[in-house]
Structures are given as C-alpha cells and as structure tokens.
Length: 309
Image (cartoon, rainbow, N blue to C red; front, top):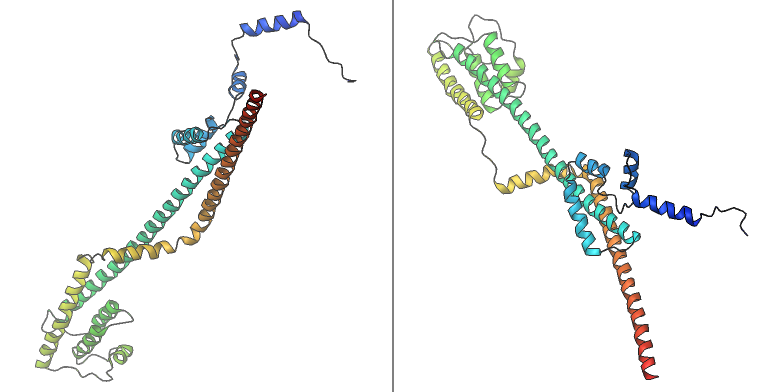
C-alpha cells in the first residue's frame, strides 16, 4: 500500500483539459517557444549554437548537415542509441577532415615563413653587395682615374671596408698593388694584418713609370670585380630545377613535423573512433536482422506444424 496520496482527476476535469488542449495554439512566449523547439530534439546538429561554432571555425554548417543526412540515410537509425552513434560518427569524420586542413595550413605557414626568412637573408646579402660595390667604385675613382693617384689611409680604409675581415683571392691580389701606389713620403700605413694576410712582409713603393704599370694592373683586377658585383645585384639567380625545389620544400617541411605530431595523434584518435562506431553500428544492425529472422523462422515453423496437424 502506497503512503503517498495520489490525486485522482475526475472525468469532468479530464474532458475540460482535453477541450482546452484542442484550442491551444502552442507556446506564445519566447522561453516557451525555446522549450518547444528542443522538445523533440534528435541530434542537435541544427541548433544555432552548433552552426555558430562551425561558422566561427571557418566551416560550412550546410556541408556538415549534408554529410549527416547522408550518414542518416546510410545507417537509418531506429532508436536513440543508433541516432547517437550516427551523430558521433559524423562528428568524428568531420574532425578528421578538420585535422587534415590544420596540417595543410601548418605546412603552408611554415613554407611562407621559410620564404620570408630567405627573402630577408637575400635582402641583407644584396645590401652588403651594393655597399661593397660602392666602396670599390670610390677606391677605383681615387686611385685609377688619376695619373697621380696615390694610396693613403683613406684609400686603404675603403679597401678594408669593402672586403671585411675575410678577403678572398682577388682581395689578396689587390692589396699589394695598392701598397705599391702609396705616397713615397707618406709614413708607413698601419695595416700589418693585411700584409701578413697577403703573405708579403715588405712591399716596395713603385717609382716613376712603374706606378703607371701598377695602376693598369690594378684596373684589370678592380673592373671585373665591380662588374661581377653588379651582375650579382641586378641579375636574379637561376631557379633550381623541379627535383631540387621539391627536395628543398620537403626539407623545410620536415622542421614542422614536431608541431604537427599532436595533430596527427588527434587524427588517428578520430580514425579509431570512426572504426569503432562503424563496427558497433554494423553489429547492432546485424543483431537486429538476426533477431527478425529468428522471429520469422518461429512463425514459419508454427504455421508448418499447424498445417501438418
């Protein structure tokens, strides 16, 4: 015997309630309409919040709805459990594609950043080449354009600024010629490190006609050097062939693998989830078919036995 007193509705009250329900036009207030909208909610993918989330991620809610409807038509869920599994399957497949897009976006971003670094490096190299070319032009004008041109501290400073602390073979050929053109009555030029680098301890000063010959030899070295710098500045480098370019891109992308490892694990997790959901749905559908076949077999056997009787 129940200790809770249950109120029994009378037949008159029941009839009045049914009459009022027939005259009802549904919810009139905004909260009431909101409650009515979710009263028969099946999977929630058409809710405004879900669409807002997809739109915020730059994805098309209509495309997700089409994918879901296709899965709905394929699996044809008949109860809440199957509906929930189909919904989770749609979301897992959608997330897999999202992870693919994230990986591609990371790769593109990594390549763009690498290209920016390369362009910045090339710009710095180009500026350095321009500065060297201008210094060598000033040196050429001061020493080679005039018959009486001589080398002093200022000209030697131009040379040192042009070639820096690591001069090459051409610079080591130019330096002794410059020192031979120094003024005869000028003090010793303070460049012992350059003399040691050139491999010459004592360089005699050219006298009389020798200075013209030295100057002509210096022209033969400076002019090609200046022209080579101009070509490197004005003429773009040759593009590498497609195979080398492909390998270069792969080498750059290899540096982004550490950042995409987490994305890859997320994609694999969704793939396993898709496999489990698909397998579970197949088992449920197969079990439902087997149960239906068993019932039909029992009915058929009952009919056969009655006919025999």
